[in-house]
Length: 474
Image (tube, rainbow, N blue to C red):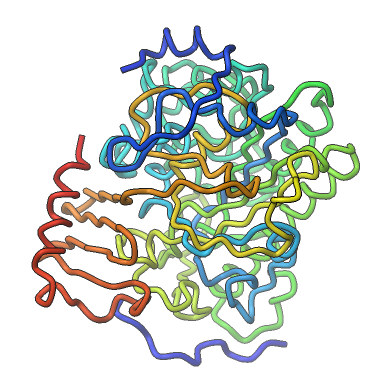
């Protein structure tokens, strides 16, 4: 049994879609150039193509509301995460990876390569409309160069219908299983889910908790890996809804005998259960002889939550306090904050042997370069030798994966209009936060917990931050 983990002091808290898709089959070998506040170019395709490397399979796992401090590789001492720790030990651990403050904006930014100043979905309430036909997703880009594309789990962008412009099948995914709608995605015992445009019923969950959605997500992901043709590269996004509220799990597992509140036991098992599912995916890659050419990347969609409301038809209120397991580590803030605890997330990646060179980073390397989920689109496109659209905010970090010199962001920007208009900008070690008051300024290399506002000491830097914020809004 574990001892009570609550032993710390709480903290303060343009290319068109049509023209692009027509050009996707042609790779260009071009250098990365700086773009609007972030970088890139319209043409990417440099790194993988220049090396004549095989196009890797890409397995992306997105975890819901997993805090920066909830993974063993990031300092967690109570919650067991052996699979994520294994990926970090065998690959890369990113210590300055960023998402957005909530679920739907992160997914939009990830799929379209744009930060929340430019992305279509800036807050969860925008998810009901979702994406439009003119939006270009990473799935479309990879599909255009011959990838088989699939998403299993939480899509969370668009209306809950099988035929709408934001449906995954209309946004580049050959195969989809799971939740279309953002709100529906947190019913862990759903009466229906979607397979492509077909609505599947689970009548046993009508008034009872019988079939757990997370189990279905894993089964579908494993089935996808069983079906893929080894001769065709694939991109599979497995988006788990755990450990998001309402903190429900079929079995409390290794934590069942703990004297913690029920919500905390459930949350703990959600974290470890999710880690176990990642392990099953890794095992299946090995069993199918796919691991040697599959990039595996796991990332959370925002910081830890402090929620307990039931999203389902049966569940109970099982509150979770992120202080209980020190879910955000030394970081200030949680989900819905633009402070580090709301947006800095755990991210680990395993580099396949097919991409390794003498210059590749050693197993267990730590990457401290600041990057964000909107960098995933250009990174995956780069490794696949694909063209990317103009106007992206993301840059490719394929050079980091391959051991080449890595271009960096001029700055990173976040916007969160839910309940107000919060925004933040980071450049170098400086970070400015505009949180319903005067602009605050923090020096992250000396003050990771954002406890000391030094804005009054650096008016010129505050002015620069205000300019960057203004320039980063679409």
